[in-house]
Length: 398
Image 1 (cartoon, helix red, strand yellow):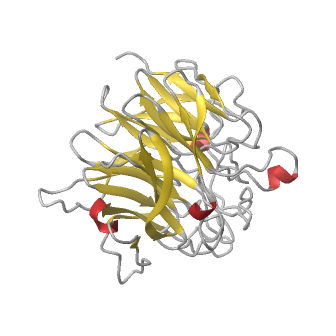
Image 2 (cartoon, rainbow, N blue to C red):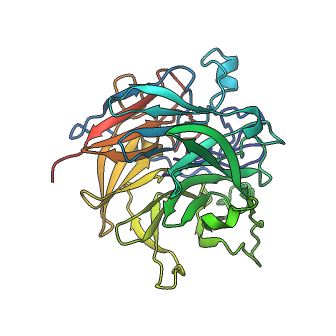
């Protein structure tokens, strides 16, 4: 992802993709239902061909993991937005914990990697919501700061965590003006960030389908924030910010659109649509201009696309299918196969517990379990429950 989805609505009416659709100013678990109730997916039967195991049982100060990225030396940097602070905390399910970044090394040992300082928090909300992340060409880590749960009025940002001598030392804002900054991925000197809601979802009329949702992907060159943060202009039907490289119109059934991002080896950009389980492909010309997005993968067995990851070794895209506690594999002809799915679980045995992000390290698919349910018949996961986990699934040999 480089980001996700688990991502996450509020006051609003927004929906997190993490997939949601409602959350209060304290960032509590969303409770707003989709405007029109779609039919629920069939409860997945646990597959046994590729059984997940525990990679890491997270400490209690990591109550809501989300985006992650893989470093060149095989370590995983994992975002911990802790959106599960709030109602579960009031019920005694979790303790309030600040957002932070952690590292899982090659031996699967977890350590705190960066703890956000007071100056890093949004000046209006006094919060930070780290999600998708990726390492830039300058060696620093870039992180989506999703402010949707705290204030939906274009407060989300892209942050840079500065690394010196291998250690995270400080944080700066480089892009402002998102509603939901979500996945982050670099290609050359350009960072691509999914905007899960280009405009706040419109309310549906009673008994009618939800209005279509508009979302997209921005591309910003590293040179553009040399002197000051880039400020994105709010999207309107008449005018889009020039950094917008792709726009999608989707069902609106949940309120979370563009989510996971990945590139293949030929430089094509793929974006997963959280609410529809569709992957779009965008190609770039010799002049760098993007083509119109086209549907790359659409299959009834793929209900949701949160985090996605192209794996060079087998030339497949791995997909966190949050709604059904599943991971899908998509070959480059667009065909979808299920690596694993399971029913509702607390994840203690490594079973998937609302997966939001995937990456491949060696011959294992690493799956981040967000465990942040909202009230919906679409979602297999039904409650926040300990332990908080990251799973691993062995990738079948070719």
